[in-house]
Amino acid sequence: MSVPAAYFAVVLIWSTTPLGITWSSETVNPTLAVLARMVIAVVLGWLILKVSKIELPLNRQAFKLYGYSTIGIFGGMSFAYVAAQYISSGLISLIFGLAPILSGILAQKILNEPKFSKTKKFALLFAMVGLAIVCYDKVFAQTGALSSDSYLGIAAVLCAVFFFSISGVLVKSVDIKINALASTVGSLVFSIPFFVAVWLVFDGTLPVDEWETKSLLAILYLGVFGSLIGFIAYYYVLQKLDASTVALITMITPVIAICFGALLNNETVTDNLIIGASFVMGGLALYQWGGRKRTKVTVPT
Image 1: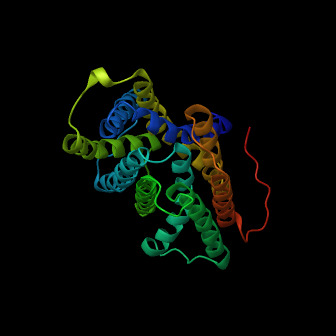
Image 2: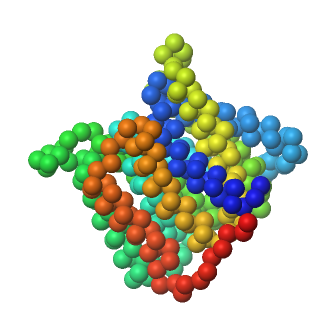
Image 3: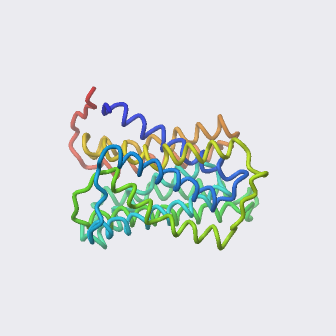
């Protein structure tokens, strides 16, 4: 796999994942949709491990890694699917773009990383202003009253971002060398019992006659690409490119996701959404590169 191809794959997959979540939950219960997605990814990943003769570590450190990863997979995915019932796929992607900043805050507490500089604090404030603009536009009507259940979706996706971020920070604390595919498969295996439990408690049915092809194809896409190939490609570019180049992904994907949502799912793009998104993207850019000396970054071809 070439680096540019892998990079493009990550951007495309991450940009379409929120829309895939929305479509997969249209006729399939969200708890079953996310469970089916994970099962597909595990089965395919396990087959690739066997064919490639890649070892799946089963030691204490590996279990610790899988457990920490499960926090992000189960917590992040569960709340993301809840959010998809109330807000647009573009907004989900935009709020998820705040993960690097939240991860930085959590890393200070958990990994004792240095505190934010003044520039990063300003970047955080800048991004929060953008988020406030977007949330106000979605939650409040012109009268200032609550306009819908959008606040539930926003709260859910914020929870998803929190679990995703704290999981990533905890994973960094595990000292282990492991193949990216093995790490992905092991983590997915650990997470499946939790998804099964949630499905049994909140649904537990299989109304096959209600399922539409669109939802089933979305689940298949998310299982193969969103939960497996996307992770493999991401870890690959993370090994090959510098962190600042990889960080561009979190700024590119929300913009593309908003466009996909508008073009393919008739999602409304308001002036406030554009303004708020600009603030969030600007805050992320300032967070990643603010205060650094300019260096030329090239992507290998």
